[in-house]
Image (tube, rainbow, N blue to C red; front, top):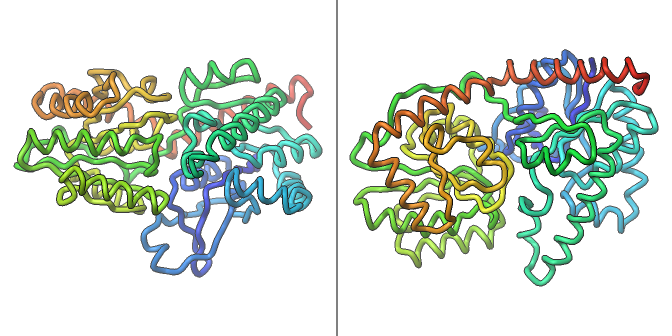
Length: 403
């Protein structure tokens, strides 16, 4: 089976080697390896060595990367249509789709329309991988000036309706969690699938944390309003008042004005000396930070199912989290995480304090979450996905609906 994986996460290239700051392109390499043959169709940009040194190398064990013209997300697609690039995009999609057996497109994606049209014309089976809610979980809409955000949200809602219309003709729609499954079930054949793939080196067992004189708190995410970074910083100030030696490591990038605003907030809160902004880090650096962290905190106000839940669990970092989006479905309160029911600084700080104070709870969270994380082992998980796709194709062939 020759599989085409379509994704809009930007891939960087230096001296014919590829690098990524996102996690899904790396996951795609495992899926292609499991399929035996395939292509990752994603935007590619040349980058200097010093930038790539901070990124995760993409190891191609099978298949290839084909540069996609789909840059810039929704804003890039809108600009491109204004500039008359729709025809070029359609031809690029048709060319790449025609040489594959099945297409798996990760969405939300404003460029799905071009891939879907190419699959219909070929014809080729199209499957969708829904990573999260289109509007509520969008990072991009919060990067638009506030005066234009209602327009941006309306544009995203229109995209969402279009993608759900496309889903009616898709072979399958994979969703992370029951909430997304319920949202998408009227529009196609929905299968719940947690889209996380952890490489062997990600796992590191340790039975307990919070054993030293200082406490390290970690947050790994896009730095944006939906991810609740301001909430986390205000909660951290309360923790700093309660405990003599705490530190917060923030891993991830964001728009420079927004990140600078976060840094000003740390100064206003009086915690800038114990908050570190690491920016984007490669997988090795993230693993190092996770293995030195005592508590993992997720303060999302809107989200899908963050991969950092699985990564933290694989590195045995006990989790305190809000229940936003699909998070509540991915963890069990008191068993694999402490879920904060109120998105307030005091509630988040109380959740962290509870984990700090209760060693029995902490060790239970670590052990149970680590066992859950084993199900995301990249090789086994990608093989299971390819097996599921193969069975779906057999069913379609039996009904005569796939050429």
